[in-house]
Length: 622
Image (cartoon, rainbow, N blue to C red; front, side, top):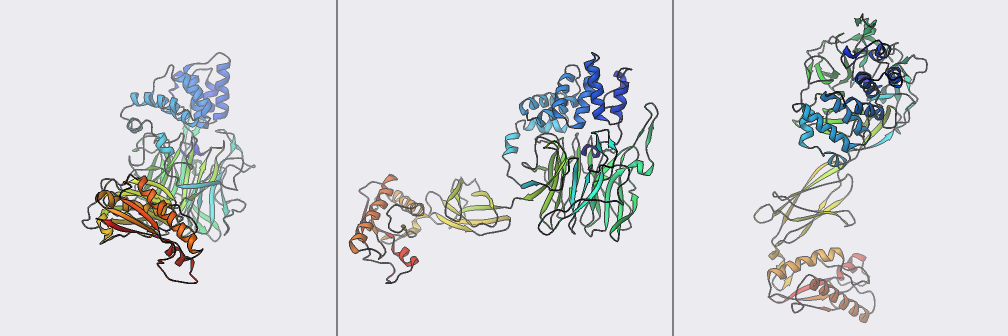
């Protein structure tokens, strides 16, 4: 149903009429009237009766394409390319194959499309990176999603949440409405549902004063809640073009404006840039109310349906519509624009690199950058569209036919933080490339390790509201650990300035952070190993240096037990250093039990006990 607002209310067949004949006349009239369900049946009967032809195959493919029956569409496009060589046929065929998850075959058809239309922007982008899908699949997840509880068994799409918690959307759920031949569903109405404080949506109610006997919706609401722009039909204004040959009236999608009158919407007027020779639809109003975004097939675009914007003045008049250009639009279809309060524009496209069908894209209009596919799980091999986002409530909505019907979904942002670590020499300020940077969770578990680039930088993307730390090492430098505080998104800059390794030598001692041991244990912990690696670096730099490891315990346990435990800890420490290639003639260890406490105490705290469980490193020979 959503394709109603991508194409015209009534359109002529996409193929030339030359191939029509008396056998196809009835089916052609159904197709021209957008009654694709019945048209497909009529064309299929012609095939069954032995009257199939390249024209009939093409009409079948187009009928199923417009219904997004991707399996049947792909089946008939395969027949079409046996005789037709138009580039766009290969593009549509590839789209349907992608929707069916047949990416390898889709790429083959895209290759043919690119060869036939080398200057098409879609072909150019495809040739730049034909195997883009693995990267798209591995893209960082931006949203969690769930099915909205107010969906019906008919088309529901185009949801926008107002600041007063009203969710407006278009739906074909009305059982009292006549059916639309496109997909045999009732005509669209505009509905609203109230969101409660716990995020539950109430029973949707039709917006009676907006709805008519024609298609109505979707809509956009001003920030103050007093102005609505919504899509409907030109027939509402008795505006259409007559097709005398087929005895049809060709209508368009129009945009209308309504204002709040108490609890009702009234004063409904069409906008001045409506035109009975092209459609304008899917309105979205900026926060300040001065810019209206919409989709249209009006002249002057990039091809297909494009996204446009128009200035809205204080007196209610409109400027000249402006095409958003190649940064947004392609030779394919771009539709369902939605502008957020912080000027991020979401839109759907079938002309950009995606998973199949329509995909949702986003671009920050305040920055000169490229539109970005929002990735999984919002996008899928099917049609994903009409993404809107309420920044004040930090919640989004989109529509998809991934389950066979146009349904509404909630999109909740996955909160993330970019931890940008820059490693430098603390004395010279020189950036240190190839330094090892590990990101650790709040339990000191290493999540991942990377090496710095030429500028000494590593970037990690982590969850919001969690404490982390980065552990940094580099040959010739004292490693260090830098805390990363909790934050609610955005980025955190960590200045990881490392001291040259000589800094830990203090006369006759190599000064390390304490090598703590767990209670009653002698194994080297991961924190201890990190510190011992500094000692190893010093011993590598000074090949004649010899070290005595003195190991100590806390005062729990007998003197003899503690002496034995400390000796095991000393030997464990020595064994770790030997495992790194240091000669055993250069390292020795001895346990001192509880005889030399770091902190003298009788009723020691756990922290004091931990301070006494330590190792010291004496330089026996420089």
